[in-house]
Length: 180
Image (tube, rainbow, N blue to C red; front, side, top):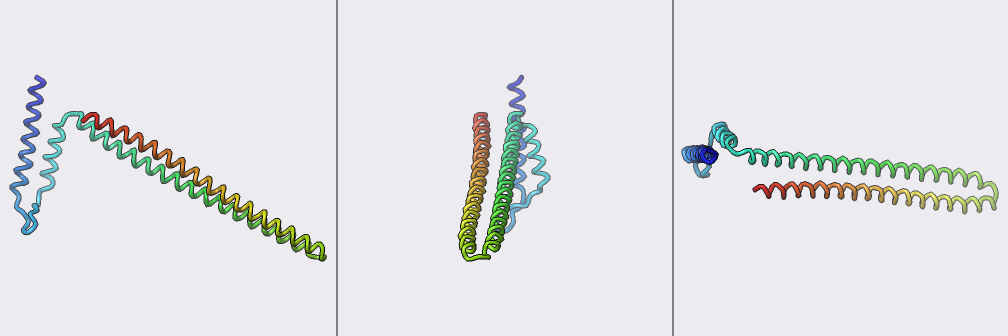
């Protein structure tokens, strides 16, 4: 009985495909192009009828393919979100470093002005101001380097997560190919 149902199903699919082919051949061609104008709804109906006759396995494969696409889109959205957050954090760190640098420079300038009153004090103040500026620049460079290292670390995490997602997708594709 099951074999008979399969043969009936195969016959119906073949009949629909023949109908599809007959319709394609019956439509007039557009001059000089060889293309035809078709009734879209007619062909969509035939294709839907064929799809309804296909076994559940084919429907599951279509569903799995749609799920795969959704997973890829979600992974891309997550990756973009992570990258955007990393850029925002990098900007915040750089702004904080710049603000800190400005505060240190202002503090150094104020300190230098206070010490300019006497010659020796002036010389010492000038020397100390240079040290403070050098320290501020060194700290700013260190903060800037830290921000870049943090951004690099976040990007590496994104890359790792994306590779995991891609690996999962590849494994899903391989599983799908086993069902062929």
